[in-house]
Length: 245
Image (cartoon, rainbow, N blue to C red; front, top):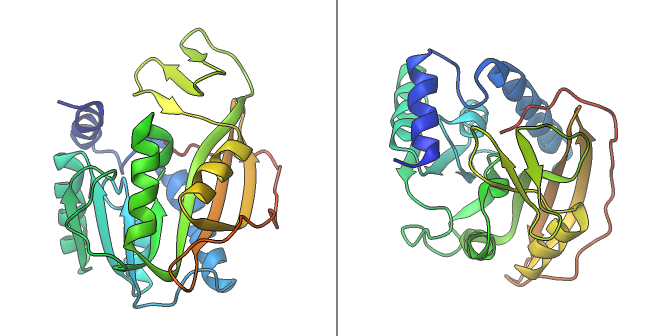
C-alpha cells in the first residue's frame, strides 16, 4: 500500500474533509480564492473547458472547478481517494471523471486533451526523473495555448524541526509521517517547467511559519511549442496560514 492510499484511508475513517485533515477547510478556501482570481484575470480558459487535476485526491480543485461549470478530470495514486471523489461528485450532482493512475504516465489521455492542467499540490511529491516525465505529460495533454496551474512547496525551509530534514543538494524534504517531498528553490522550479516547453506567465509567492509556497501559471505556446520563460509578474510575500499538502 502506498503512503497516499494509507493516508486517505485514515482521513476517510476519521471523517475528515480531505487531504490536510483539520486544515482541509483552509486549503479549500485558499484554492477557491486563487482559482477565482485566475478566472477573473482571464488566465484560466472559460467554462466548459476540459481541465485535469494532477494528484486530485478526493477532488479539491476539481470540485471547485466543476461548480464553475468546467468539465473536470482527475488522476491520483490512491484508489480510496478516487472512489471518494466519485462519491462526493455523485452526492452533489456534479460530473467528474477520475482515474487511479500515475501522473508521470497518462497514455489514456490524448494529445491536446485539456485547456488547463492543475497541480493539486502533487508536483512537490514527485522526485527524481518522475518530475520531468510528469511535466512532459502536462505539455503533451495541453491544447496549444493551454494553462498549467502549479501549487508547490519551494525552498528555503524557514524553520527546523527534529521530525524534518532537508537536503540542499537534492532538494528533498524528509518528514516523519509524510512521503519525501521535492522542495527546490523557485528559480529551479521555473527552469524545470520552462524545459518542458511551457512559458511562465505569473508567479505568486507566500510563506507560513516553516516553509515557502509558490503559485505559478505557465502557458503552452499557441503553435504547440514553448517559448523562453517570462519574468515573474506578481509576488506576494505576506505570511499566510497555508497548509497545502
